[in-house]
Length: 418
Ligand SMILES: Cc1ncc(COP(=O)(O)O)c(C=O)c1O
Image (cartoon, rainbow, N blue to C red; front, side, top):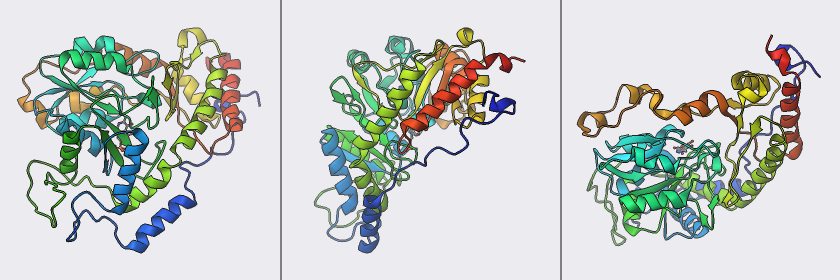
């Protein structure tokens, strides 16, 4: 057992971690109801229907809005589509800048490019890996129109500071909650603090519809424009009896299906349970990891973290082994983990070589280059370790295997240097 698996020893964990997502009888019943109804979309309005979607879509949207206490919820076929719609709906114009964190999934930033607006990247905090509000003023310019804070891995951004900055500079705030449904900052649900919030239901997320997304807002104008972007820019009048095919502006086919909405209804009813299981597993792992000198997991007291991913920092100087070697060894022990997350987005050719039409007419000065966000680069290259299997139906015993494997590697770290 003592020989490290990476050096030919026996693995700590031979069997795979439990499969995610959890699909139960409720999901099956919901899906069968849709199949039996024969209505798989209902956005293509039959006489008497308007363009707000089918029965399940509207039920899912109503339940989602009720859960988060907002006036409106608008379902999409992905969070990426919802983010694009949000950028349009809050009033960003082509050529404007949208401030986004440097450490996030691609579509937080490409949602701006899709509208020919320019993402400007703001560095992140060492402890939570979320956008650092202190750095906002260095990214801001008179072209800035919106900020998209991302509650990364399920931990809330510093929303008080971000909202104060947005108010001072008259910026709109789109919360990217793809990784944080049910997360809380102080006393507010994530997604309800800014002008609108966007969620993802892609398969790995805390709740899933296979693929899917949702935008929530209290602003009727944002909801209306988001619905139009979702449906080819077509106007929706509650009294409208048949489809007009009149596009008021550029939209696209971003509609969710009835099957996805049906899954969403069942999954939403379990979201609190899924999150509480994630929290239980993560708190156990966090307490064990924080006992080890050189490893650190941080959660702020006033935040409900919903642990889409369990991430922690690895201190190479203290431990004397590189983060990459540690992650390779942990994977070899049968514990899937990542060395970092997505590389800083501005390091992609899309930005370095400005491979988007949006840049052609851009009059601002923002540039993309290695070194732009030094905290992100250091965290990504040397420090961050990500573990995605901290989720039900995994158990504390499964978490214990992670702890045993980490301790085994650190107890044998000298062998990794030869
Ligand atoms: C932070 C963030 N934003 C946006 C998205 C896009 O979500 P979707 O896959 O539903 O388009 C993701 C997906 O992983 C994400 O993690």
